[in-house]
Image (cartoon, rainbow, N blue to C red; front, side):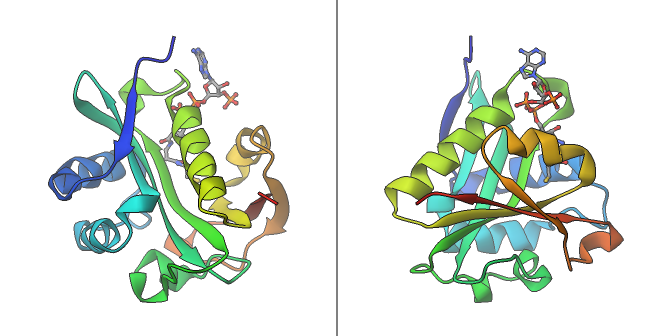
Length: 164
Ligand SMILES: CC(C)(COP(=O)(O)OP(=O)(O)OC[C@H]1O[C@@H](n2cnc3c(N)ncnc32)[C@H](O)[C@@H]1OP(=O)(O)O)[C@@H](O)C(=O)NCCC(=O)NCCS
């Protein structure tokens, strides 16, 4: 049984999400505290945290764009965020290693997809590493192949989910 509570991020969650990001990603790929600060203040509507016994154990965060793929610059700045855009761009999905493989990321993803549908968005975009392509396909995401992204020096794949 899924016993987590999913809610929108709050300003006070900044330290918790930064810590989880540093646990989940290598330092070259992890979003820094300042970037989270900007994402939280600019688009808290697209930033959800999962709580277990009042403690944050994971989160998903996003921005909005009219582009079809996520530009690397969007990982650094919300200047590219267009609140009236068609597509939700997922910046990251993190579950603390201690709480992985319990379906919590799935709940976070379903929550974000539902919220994007309610807001009338057309697509959800993400980039992921090869080993997670299958994972995202279960939600209906389509793999478009190797991305132009050079984020953190890794190889990424572009994926999208049609909502309409
Ligand atoms: C990717 C990530 C978010 C997944 O988080 P998670 O909460 O473990 O995800 P889920 O529990 O929904 O699913 C993970 C796996 O556990 C399995 N699982 C889900 N519930 C389970 C349960 N109750 N018992 C056993 N396995 C279970 C899922 O089937 C899935 O298996 P699969 O990979 O073979 O498809 C997490 O591993 C993470 O934070 N990784 C580091 C950061 C990262 O790479 N993020 C993605 C960036 S694109």
